[in-house]
Image 1 (tube, rainbow, N blue to C red):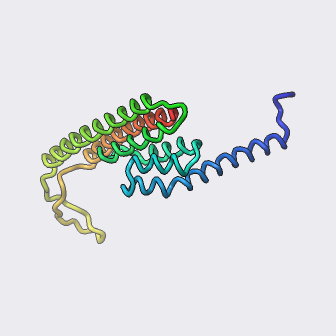
Image 2 (image 1 turned 60 degrees about the vertical axis):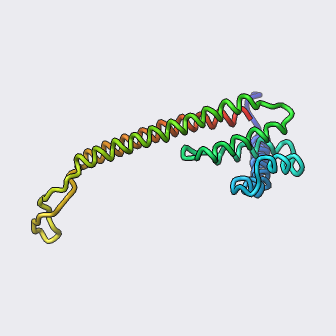
Length: 192
């Protein structure tokens, strides 16, 4: 009978969860203006460190790092990635218990993944482009009009199966990299 919770206990647990979520949103709301300046390059990493150290509570540091991590994507440029890595590590230096080496390792993994993604994407796009050029010779084909007449129309030589194959290949490529990227991001967040 100890496993059965009363309605009051369940309600209190839900209230605590809602309170903690609201608190997290409040912290993010307070950090948004500062991080917006950082992302828009109105302040650099040193200024970010100074502001957080001076104006914010230590329990907001991980939240700020998480917000920076959430701004990353597979199409993040090298410059943006470098700046965000510096920001994450600078904030880490404010904490009592630091995990800088692990965070740096995960950021390096993210950086390598983004570079591999870009290289493979460019290669795949070039292959698709070449195959389309080989198969895209326009041909005159009979086409049925709305009024039932048959007319000759110039159409691409690329058939629907080929288009589907390209779309599937692109989709699988994006999914593979997105899954790996999301895994790295989750590992990064777990080490904050």
